[in-house]
Length: 466
Ligand SMILES: Nc1ncnc2c1ncn2[C@@H]1O[C@H](COP(=O)(O)OP(=O)(O)OP(=O)(O)O)[C@@H](O)[C@H]1O
Image (cartoon, rainbow, N blue to C red; front, side, top):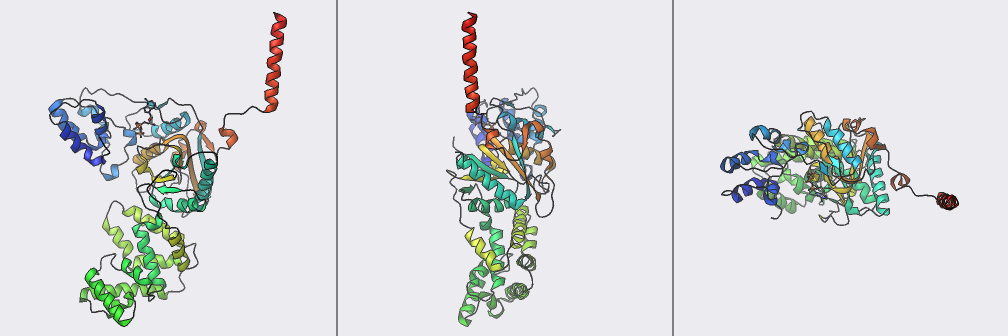
């Protein structure tokens, strides 16, 4: 059976098992993995055939925000009386230190069914917990550490950086670029290619030189978000008018023969952009923020109620913050253009960057977990116990080394994530592990000489005694 999107499992399982009892074959087990998504189907099937084999892990139920209900798996033995529960606690993936840390973090979830992972591997290296002054220093530190590991022979594709929200990738992407570490954003586009970031930068370009013909491209991108009735027809009228007068598209908002309703909305948009353009005393960050508010862009996002809206608003906040570091809009726009090179989807030979949710089910030899800070992780938008399970998922992605980092300043002073306190002292190391702490202790030539001498003497003594 090939790869199937999660949501097709129930349908497929139902079809393939329609007239047969469901037995624990590889197929059925795979199809029923993540039982908390599909308990209703299980009931239906059990009613017909009476045999159910389901695989799931309540500690990894992290999709409540999109409708998955953890209660399905938690009350499984109540729903299916007499069901035998087999706990799979032997873990082949992670070292002892990683599992001890993960076990300790999830143990604080009092509502869980309960299991304790046991390592089959060696104890390994403790979790590195590394503190930074601010998020920029954190990104620089991670990129430098990754370069070091590369120099020690670790393959790029064996390294992953897993973060809670996708706006957190921005600083790390830039430092990886600077450190010349090849990377790929898995299942996502780079920060500057995200639609809302492109929209905001288009507004900024427009306000920077409203009547420059190069701004027409920015106008085309920005003019109808939020929708103002400037569809293909109205845009065509604007293009003709601008061409005839030799003016910009923004100027044409007041001169073109648009239908009255569209004309009002287009005129208001042009006025909002020009008002910000005229405010030459404002900083780049202030101008960007004013544009997002006065054109109604931010409000439009808030009103959309899409699942992704918080992530988009976070990306905009990150962009405004970033803009604070630039003296002029032109500098920021140039920087964005240079950093926009699209990384491919090919993970071979690249460090992988992905959100914690996307990382579920995956594993990597080296895992970096940045931004373990109160504002970022646990997320202020998330449900507390689900955030804890996400921390468990995060730690258990690592096979050999897991490095958790946090900053003291991230859009203001922040505290370390409370999940950090739950990692036992025995299983953590503050700061990066230096190579001499990582490798098996080497015996110095002096010590080797001493050992050889002692062995020889012991042999001699033995012979004398004989
Ligand atoms: N019997 C085994 N012997 C050795 N290695 C094993 C065995 N079973 C699984 N593994 C290895 O353990 C790792 C984890 O296995 P797998 O991905 O199937 O676990 P999982 O329960 O789906 O994990 P998760 O849900 O946490 O992602 C993999 O690297 C797999 O190859």
